[in-house]
Amino acid sequence: MFDHRMTRRESLHTLLKLSGTAAVAAAGLWPATARSASQQRHFIVEAVAKSGEANVAILTRKTFEAAGGMGQFVSKGDVVVIKPNISWARPLNMAATTNPEVLQAVIELCQEAGAKKVRIADNTIDNAEFCFSVSGATEVAKNTGADLVHPDSSLMREMKLQGDRLDVWPVYLPIIEADKVINLPVAKDHILSSLTLGMKNWFGAIGGRRGSLHREIHPHIVDLAQFFKPTITLIDATRIMTRNGPSGGSISDVVTKNTLILSDEPVAADGKAALLFGKEPQNIGHIRLAGKRGLGTYDFSKLLQKTVSV
Image (cartoon, rainbow, N blue to C red; front, top):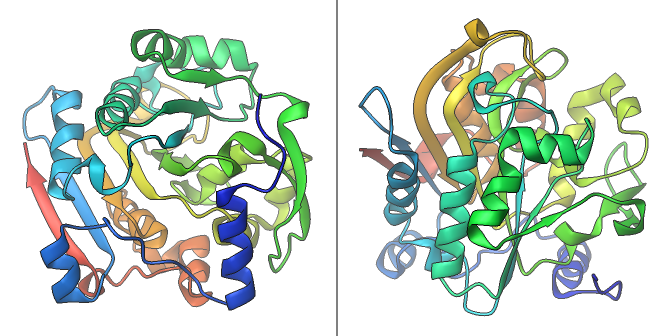
């Protein structure tokens, strides 16, 4: 069961809002020498497997190694929640859901870093049991011993989001009550928001009438991105859906990119992923708005950047 009292993570949100601070520079976001030299600048890593069929587990490990290892983000005894996009009952080759091989590799890295518990949490659109099974999440949980949290109304709590459009809204407790949160979306097309990447993935972290939020989707995405503060974002672009998103039409809509994008800067992560679709970040409504609201930057020159080839 999840403790409904104010947690460490909720306290952090409260402190952030009271102080007006947009983000907390947490120790461990980059190797110590780089942090010292750069005054804890944010970072972005883009890792690409050059071979036709990528070894996804190796690609994932190399991505985190480039950022100093999972131990930079997850500490011994942490309860870690991973938020994939597994909202649709679609298999891997449709690129509608997070690659289960990436999900498993991230869980294993968290466990190696000493996490006390790793949980997989997403408030699915299709039937949860079916989504978990078809997407591969059930098998991943079985393989790793991670908890696969089934969405339930009892795990929702109305909270003040303090957004421009969203005030009080039901929020998925497992994500709020974690010590560390890893946002692990798949990169894909979206009929309304142009793309669904990291910031859009928070639609799966809330309850309520989510469909109503699509009417003004870009400011609602940014309101959620302002509230949810992941430890890191890892965008799965091993396969990307280039049209007919978010649920997908056919395999012909899918392009293999063999790419992962890791950042402690959600706007930068989404901005870099947008380039994979041939889209400029500033031309995506919610990315542009998030930058204007001070949630981050898509000016990559302001970040510590690393590119990894596997």
